[in-house]
Amino acid sequence: MTKTAALDDLLPALEMHELVDQAVTRAGERSWTIAELDWDSLRPERLSETDRSAVRFITFVEDHIPGYLSHFLEAFPVADAEQELERFGFNREYFRFLVAWAGDEERHASALGRYQVETGMATREELLRSLAEEGRKKFALPYEHPVQSFAYTLIQEKATQLFYQRFRETVSEPFLKDLLGRLARDEARHFAFYSNLVGAYVARDGAAAVPGLKDVIATFRMPLADTMKGYWRWSLKVADATSYDHTESYDAVVRLVRGFVDTPGEPTVDDLGAFVQAIRRVR
Image 1 (cartoon, helix red, strand yellow):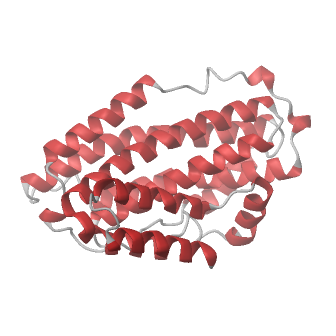
Image 2: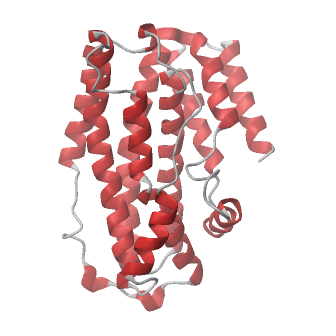
C-alpha cells in the first residue's frame, strides 16, 4: 500500500475480530512443531536433483517472512497514538492474525533450513549466508486499497498451497513428503482466512470490488519474483518438474466473487472469469 487507507476501506473492527478469531483458533488446533517431525526417517539418497533444487527454492521464499511481516506492519500500523480508534481497531485485529501467520511461516523456513543441512544440501554457514543475501531485500506491494493487498495474499497463499501439493506428488523421500503435506495444510488455512476476508469486502461492495481485484490479477507476481537473481528461470524449471501453474490460483478469486454477487450472469463476474482466462493464456 502506498498511502494511508481511507476508513471506509476497512471493515469494522468487530467483523475483523470474528474473522481473525476463527483463523487464530484453527491455527492453535492444527499447529505442529519441528521437534515432532520424524527426523530419523530421512532418506536423502531418494532425493532427485529436481527435489533438491525445489527445496532450496522454497526455502528462500519461506525464509523471507521478516520482509513480508515488515511490509504489513508498516501498511497496518499498531503503534500510532494519533490514528483513529476505528483504524487502530482494525489494525489491532489484523495484527493478531499476522502474529499467528508469521509463526507458521517461520516454522516452515526453519524446518526447510534444517532439512537442507540434515540432507547435506548445504552447511549451516552456507545456508545462513545465502538466506541473508536474499532476506535483506525489501518486500512491498504496490496496491493502494487494503482489499487489494488481501487479494494478493489470497492468491499467493493458494498458489503456494497448490505448489506444495503438486511437489508432494512427485517426491519419494518420506520425510519431505510428510513435511510438504504439513506446509500445504498451513497454507490452506492462510488461504481460508484471506478468502473470508476478501469475501467480506465483496459481500459489502458487490460488483464494485471487481475492478480492484482485476488489477491485482493483472499485476500479480509471486514473492521475490522481482528481487531474487535468476528467479524466473529457476521458478519455471521447478514448475515444469511438478506440473504446477500459479495462475490456477486466480480461479479462486472468480469463485469467491461469484459466491457473493448474487445475480446470475452478472456481467462483471463473467467478465472477471474471462479476464482470468485471458491472463492465463498469455503466461
